[in-house]
Image (tube, one colour):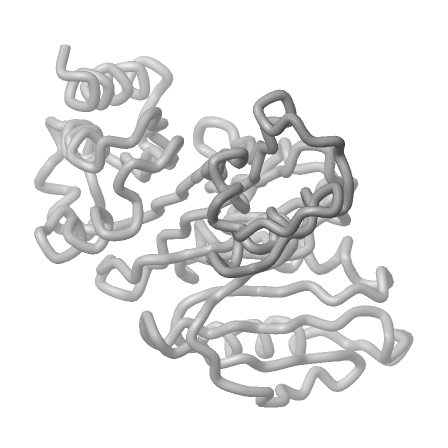
Length: 314
C-alpha cells in the first residue's frame, strides 16, 4: 500500500515522502527544508513532484540532487510551467568539472495544461536541456499512476493524486478447476475487457466472460497531496474532479480560521475551508499540513481541531 511520511517539523518547510510497501522505490513531494529526510530516502527517490517553486517548496532541491548525483540513475521531476528552466538554472549555478557525464539523468516533465506535458532531459556536465516530446499523461510506473490538478496560488500550484494499480483476486474454491496458466490468461482478458477470449481448461474451451465471475477487482489505494491553493470555486471544482473518494489526502491548511483575511490575501487555505473541502470530496481520511511558520504548537492544535470539526462534522 502507498504510505506518506511528512519529513518536516513545525516551522520547517514542507516535504513529504511517498513510499510503496515492499518496494525500495520512493517518490518525493516538494523540496522544502525537512530535517527528517534522510540521505538513504533521498537516494531511493525515483521521481520528484513539485507543486510550485516558491522558496518554501523548492529551497532544498540542491540538497536533494547533492545526494542523487553519482547514482547513474534516471530521476523524473514533475512540476508546473517553467520548471525545466528553473531546474536548469539551479544545476548550472555550480561548477561541475569533476563529474562524469553518466553520473545521473533528470527527466523533467513540465505541466503546461491537463492535456499537455512537455518532456525534457538534462545531464551533466553541461546541463543543457534537451526537448524530448509532448505527451498527454504525467507519470506511470509499475507501482502507481499519478493524476493532477492545476490550482491557483497566484501561480500554478500542482496537486497530485497517487493511485496504486488495481489488483485482481482469483477465487479458486468457486471454480472447481485445477490451477494452471489459464488463470493468468483469464486475468489478462479481464484487464483488457476481452470478453470473447477463449480460455482452455482441462480440455474444454470457455468464453472468458463466462469465467469473469471467478475474479474480483480490488481498486488500488489512492493517496493525494494538495499543496498551496486559494479558497475559491474554481480550485474546489478541480479538487473535486481529481480527489473525490480518495482514500487519504494531505491538504495545505496554512492559516487558522481567525486569519482568513491573510489566507485570502496570500492565496492560501485555512482550517475549516480545507476540512470542509475534504468532506465534500468524501475522502476516507484527511490530514492538514503545511502551517504558517508564525504558529506555535498550540496554534497548530487549534488548526487541526477546526479542520477535523469541518471534515467529520462534529
